[in-house]
Length: 216
Image (cartoon, rainbow, N blue to C red; front, side):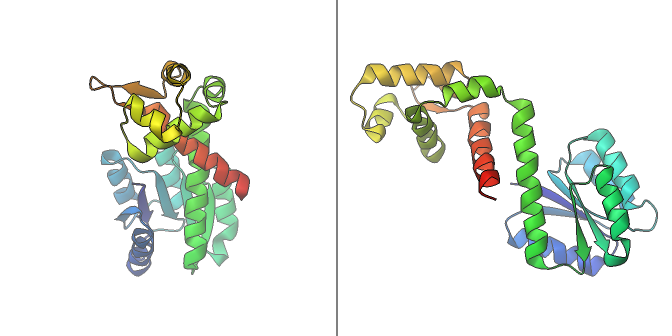
């Protein structure tokens, strides 16, 4: 589950944002200020931070700078009032992914969160996966269907896969499975069940991110 930290000194707003995000299926932690946010991030990994720009003590820019010292790719969305939009734009120049003006609309907030997470996921794909090897492995539609079935149903035996793909030629099925195993996308346990590897799961998530990006 996506872990989001909401940082804002306004308790009512902070709790409202947390409630909206939790209702949308995200896991949420909150911090009332910059120091508390840095303390939380020292003990917990977050996928996204919603960060108020103007706070007493450490301001949003300083908090973002310190967060990025530890996690350079951590996505940050700035929360700002209309009067400080220019400062929010400066924050984006310094590494923020987006900004949301207060008071915000729920649909705008969620759209920004989902768009930012999709972009971050797409960037992670480019940096962590051998794309040449993966694209060659996925060039055949049968291999893409194998990955789809394994993602949907978990571990499947050889004959289960043959039945689901309605493939009577076991030699061809063995060939496709061999290609996917050599690409590191699936593995086989001692009970002969095939399942996605961690990289295989990443590839499927990347494919969805790419499809979403192309449809936007």
